[in-house]
Picture 1 (cartoon, rainbow over the protein chains, first blue to last red):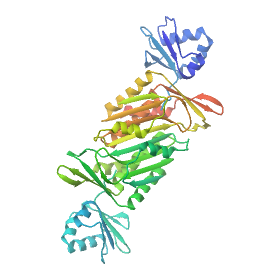
Picture 2: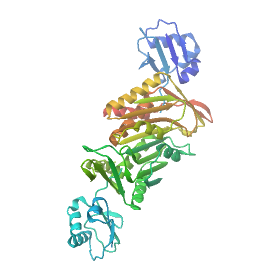
Picture 3: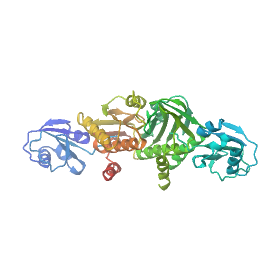
Length: 81
Length: 81
Length: 151
Length: 151
C-alpha cells in the first residue's frame, strides 16, 4: 500500500510517501497498525478529527475499506485559495 | 437657463446644449414652452415617460421647480456599464 | 478610491498592480470587466458609440465608489469607464474592489456594477444591420440595483 | 476551461486577454485574485509556504471549474494557483469566469473560490515571530461552500 502524508502529518511522520506492507481492512485499522509501530505515527494520528483521508485519490473517512485499494493519503483540512 | 440634451434627445433636437430665455417655474413648464416653440422639441418630448431630468446636476422629475436653477438636462434612462 | 472616464483601453493586470502596489494588507481583489458583445438582443452589433456627460460622469462614478467604500471594508475601489467608438470584443468598463476578505470584495464589485448600470450618465448606441439604435435601459438592471436597498 | 498549478506569478490582464481573444460574444469577465496578507489572525506573517498534492491538485481544480461551467452558462473558466514559497503582497490564486451576462460571471467566480478553499489539496504554512505554523481551516470557508448546496 502506498501511503502519502501532507503538511504537519508529513512533518511529524518525517516522510511524504512510503510503501507499507499491511493487511489492514480499513483506514482505521491502518492508522492503528502504524500508531502501534512507531511513536511518530501515534503522535501524528493522536487526534483523527484533525485528519482527512483519501483512498485512491477520493476523499473518504476513517471507516473506509482498503480492500483493493492501492493508495491512502493523510492530510489536515485543506487551506488553499 | 442652460439646457443640455443627451443621446436621442440630443439627436432629435439637434443640439447638445443651448441657452434658453425662460420664466418657466417648473421643468414641466419648460418642456411645454419648448414643445410649443418648435416641432423638433415636441417630437423629442412627446413621451416624457422615456425622458429623465436633472436640475443643476441632481436627478429629479418633471414636477421639479426651476426657481433659482441655472441648468436643466434631459436624457433617456442611462445604459452604462 | 479613484475613477477614470477615458477613450483609451485599460489593462486589468496593471490596474490590480496599481491598487496593491507597496501594500501587504490586501487579501482579495475582485474585478469586473465588461466587453462589447456582437449581439444586442436578437440583432448583430457591428459597432457601438458610448456617449456620456463630461464632468457629471466622474462625479457619479466617484459617488458609487464612495458608497461601496462606506458599505464594505474596502482598501481600494477603482472604476474605469470608456466612451466614444467601440467594437465588439472591446473592453468597456472595469470595476475593482480590494479588501482583506473575499466576501466584501465580491459584494462591493457587484454593487458598483449594479449602480453604474442605472446611475452613471452613459448612453449606448449600437450599429446593427437595420441601422443605428439607442440601447434601451433594461428592467433587469433596475431590479439588480434595487436589491441593495433591502440589504 | 483550463487550470494551472505553478510556482510562477500570473498577470490578470494577460489571463483575461487569453480568455477573450478572438471572441466577441463575451459580455462579462469576473476575476478574483487572492494575495498573501501580512497578518494571519492577530499575528504578523513574514513568509508563507504553500504545499500541494501534485496530480491530485490539477484534478480537483478541473472538477471545480467543470462544476461551475455546468451550473452557469460560462464561455470560459480559468483557475491559476501558485505553490511554494511566497511573501506578503504576492498573488496566490486567480479565478476567472466569462459569460454573456454579469450575474453568472460573478456567481461562478465566487462559487469556484468557495470550493477551492475547501476542496483543493493545498496547505499553507506561515512564518510568524513565534515560528512557523500550519494555517487552520476556517469554519467560515466551510459555511461559504455549504451555501451553494441550497441554491
